[in-house]
Structures are given as structure tokens and as C-alpha cells.
Image 1 (tube, one colour):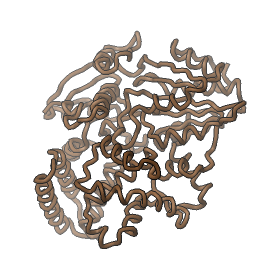
Image 2 (cartoon, rainbow, N blue to C red; image 1 turned 120 degrees about the horizontal axis):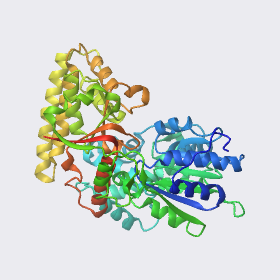
Image 3 (cartoon, one colour; image 1 turned 180 degrees about the vertical axis):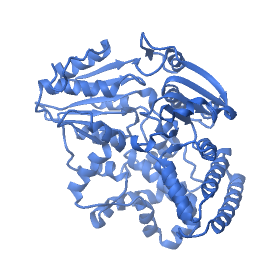
Image 4 (tube, one colour; image 1 turned 60 degrees about the vertical axis):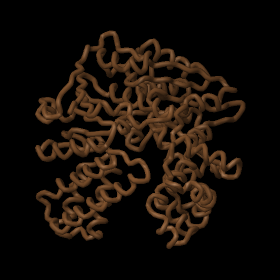
Length: 518
């Protein structure tokens, strides 16, 4: 009997096979777990059983983000570390470089010093954004600027279909200097950015905490830099090497646009193929009704419902009827998903106008709105709403003109106009009943969050599909289903991940799935 449980837990045939190999074997394990198959429970229970036999083992479970790691820490056995890859890397950076300060404008500041303030400002927003994107991808993919650099750079631009608007050569020439100074900035000034937390430990051979057993969740979304850090965090003494427990679903790989390796689990397995490796499945979803699984099987054939799963409901609803749906009476069991953020903005607008409590997952979205408010008000949060609304209107007109001018030379999607309009419309709504800009900013803070349990209570959660990992609800509404796959996806890996996005959306509901039509 487990030291951590009062009774023996009997799992499925697949779970028992995983637990047996975990406890009795010595191989690295790659657990391919389909959506809703209980991978977190399976790993925690496996961890408990392993500690019964190896009570002194040093174990860590790496979650995809901080909020998940915090929740996980409450569930794992005592002595097991729940962390993120960034916290693991940040600790290594601190030990290697001493006290550091996080500044996510680091790349821009370095580039400005290298180019000169006047030239940097004159380069324009498109160049600045392009450089920051390329630098981030270069760190995430471990681009080597000292070996076959031109080929690597061209491959990076082509793979991610980067639209650099004629600045390719200028960015290619500047990139190696920026990367070199990025490390120098840590040594001289103690400045790092978010990407550095993973990149620097792999670049500088920082001493990383090592473990006897390392669980890595959401492994399908690991970029090359994260893969390297995970390998470094496993004890690798020849006589007593640590074990890597890789957990993920290749069919839920959806972050390729941000530098994640679309073939992460395959590539990571290839890195340890000279050692004992075992791949095991979890295919029976405990979350989804049979009718929802049938839709998901059109994308992922081997996902299966439980034998006693309910049939569930799949229905369509016009958007006009959505706001009056009785399911909204229980917001704690309601989730609204969309491929794009712009329709979520419009939906939030309608909810707020009807006094329906809601929140949009993603502090960064709220941050962009707050930043715009501060920019337009000149950081004067006491500015009156009428004056602020005048500035907001002028900004809207100017941005439309900018998009129109850009569209003459290159492709500008309709979505760009929609997102701009929704952003402005959302701010205008939040201005109603407010006296000063500070009131608007406070409302934004309440609306946008990462949906921790406390924050999302009694509120309908609105989320892009990309942010829906780990979320579930009795009733899930999907806005603009026709955008999955996105019509602008062109490259093979992009199209593949678009189908994965649809699969993620279809597997969030425990009872009712509603496709919302215009």
C-alpha cells in the first residue's frame, strides 16, 4: 500500500503498464497521452508508487507554466519539486551569474546601443518587431551564429514564414552581435529577458539542478532550448543515470509559431535512443463524451471514450441566442473558445453590456490594452474620459490609415483590422461610467487574468484555443469554427498544427459542445 494513500488505486490497463515500468524498470519513458486521459493523475500516482520503493529519490515535475506548477505542487508527494522550465533555468542563471534583473526590452536596448538611438528609431516599428522576433526564435531554436550562419538564418526565416518586409539582410547582419551582447549584458549588467532563462543555461554550461527522475509535461511544445535544459537536468552518471519521463501528446503541438519544435517528442527521443527507452500510450479519455470523441477521431484516430462515457451533446447555436442561453446561469462550468483573440474581445463586449460576469484568459492581452491606455493618456491616469476618448478616436483613425498604406505593399489580413477595431471597441466600452483613465485600467485588470481558480470563480472564462491547455468545462462554446484550420496557414507544419488546434478545442468539454454560428 502506498505511503501516501489509504487504499490501493486500480488504474486502466494502460495506466498499470505505465506504473509498472516506472517503478520496476529503469528506462526513459515517453508517455503519449491523448486529451483528457488523466496524465497528471497518472504521473502523480506513479510518483507515489516509485517513492514507496525508492523513498530517497530526488524527483521533479516540470509543468508548462507557473500557475499549473503552483497547483501541481499542492498535489505531489512531499519532497517532490513542481516547477517550470523557466524557474529551473532561472535558478541556474542566478548561480552562474549572480543577482540578475529581468528586462523584456533587453533586445531592443542592445540593438539601440549597437545601431545608435537615431538609426534605431528611424528603422521603424516593423524592423524593431522583426528583430525582436528573430532574436527570440534564434534563442529558442539554439541558432549557432558561429557555424554555417547564413544557412541557419535563411532556414529560420523560411520555416517560420517571417515577413521582414525587406529587412532580412539588415537583421541577418545585426543578429550575431545582438546575441553576443545578450550574454555580455548578463556578465556586465546582470540583465536577462524571459528567453534568456532557458537559453543561457544551454549556452554557457550553467550548473543545473539534476534529478534522479524528471517528469516533463506538455513535451510536445518544447523548443530545442527547453529540450536541452531537460536533458541537462537528469542525472547522467554512467553507473546510475537518471530517468526522463516525457509526457505529452504530439497531436496537441500548437506552439510551433512561437519557436516550439513541432516534432519535439520525436527529436527528444532520438537524443536518448542510445539508452533504454520505452514509449507507452494513454488513449482512453476520461473527460469527453462519446459524441465529442467521435469528432476528435476525425483528427486523432486512436483516442477512445470510456466504456461508460455519456453520449454528450453536440449542437449549433446562432450567436444572437448565445447570451440568453441558460447555461450561462452557471458560469463556473462554462468555457468560451476561439481560434483568434479578436472575436473574444467582441464577445466580452457583449457580455459586459449585459452584466454577464466574464474574464479573458491572458494577462498579456490585458497588459496590451493597459499599455495603450497609458500611451494615449501620456501616463496621466487622472485624464478625463472625454479627453481620452478623443485621443482614442484619433488613434483608431491613424492606425487604419497605417494598415491601408501597408496593404498597398504587402498582404494585410482582415483580422488585423478586426483586432484593431475590437481593441478600440473594448476600451470604449470600459470607458462607460468611468470618470478617469485610471478607472478604465482597473477594469481591464479585473477582466483579463490567467484564470487562477480564485479569479475565475463565478465568471465565464473566455480563452483562445492556444491558452485552453489544461482547461475544461461542462459546456464549451466554440466561436468561429470555420477558422480551424486557419485559412492563412500555408506551410506543412502550420497546417498540421491547425488541425491540432481543432483537436484541442473539441476535447475541452465534459458534457455539451456548442458551435456558435453567425
